[in-house]
Amino acid sequence: MIQTDLTKLLGIQVPLVQGGMQWVGLPPLVAAVSNAGALGVLTALTQPNPDALRTAIRETYKLTSKPFGVNITLLPSINPPDYAGYARAAVEEGVRIFETAGNNPGSLIQYLKGQGCVVIHKCTTIRHAKSAVKAGVDCLSIDGFECAGHPGEEDIGGLVLLARAAQELNVPYIASGGIADGRGLAAAFALGACGANMGTRFMCTVESPIHQNIKDKIVASSEQDTVHIFRTLHNTARVFKNAVSKQVVEIERRPGGAKFEDVRELVAGARGKKVYENGDPDYGIWSAGVSVGLIKDCPTCAVLVSRIEREAEEVIDGLAKLKAVKAKL
Ligand SMILES: Cc1cc2nc3c(=O)[nH]c(=O)nc-3n(C[C@H](O)[C@H](O)[C@H](O)COP(=O)(O)O)c2cc1C
Image (cartoon, rainbow, N blue to C red; front, side, top):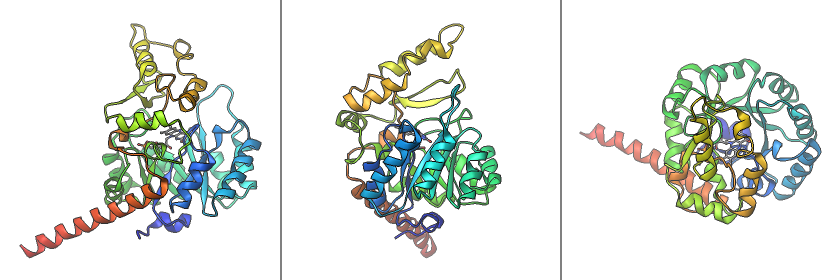
């Protein structure tokens, strides 16, 4: 067993977190991850309102007695969702672990800390990590350029970003982006992290609520099958490379560029959600990280989590042996 600051902080057995995933972070997956000894995380905004989140939390309690968390993602929006309402609903339902992500999380973090919660803030720059530390977070999830979803605009890969975190941060952090196996977890430890956060890898598990065709598509894909959209709108998102995302990129590259209105219909959330329901990978935009290239099967969460733990231990033992061999020379 690998014990770290993360396992101690969260009361879990394996230092792995399943990051918030829009339309995917639903009770059956979350409970399966937590039952496997890692931390499952419900995605608040996948629920249409705070009361629906309450129902999802109660459903998750029925499926697991292990700790699980709630993700609250603060995205730029003209009509922002009722973030405070989602947070209050989760706290009132007894949730004590939160993953926050996105813009200006200060007041949300302060509220959650005031309620005695553990807060992991996910961010893509050291600058944002430091602001979150000032706001009082317990842990950071440092999301490198490889990640699915929003990697920020600075394009710093995990290798350097995590080493920078080791230099600059005085609170525990986990590595996020591009991790899908035990090698990745062991590398995270080498870079000073106390665990890892994974999104794409958990999408492709038996308990993940998405259509089997999409899981098969992930298994059949390589690390070249993702693309960035919204680069020119300064709201970059790494998504699966398909007919729709290619069209969005083409529109963005037109002379004179593109406004959000030009791609609004193509990127509609409702179309992306439908991909997971009808199994057509070209129906809309769906998030995926470069770790799709590492995913070769669709195991249960229990098999996946224990395999990653075992592989990480083997890598760590192998590295220790390297040192022993050197000492003998
Ligand atoms: C399908 C999908 C949906 C996601 N939705 C969210 C989200 O709503 N909020 C969030 O903070 N992160 C979201 N993410 C990012 C993950 O929580 C995690 O940070 C990321 O997947 C890590 O990179 P990886 O996919 O290489 O493991 C999403 C990722 C995926 C794959």
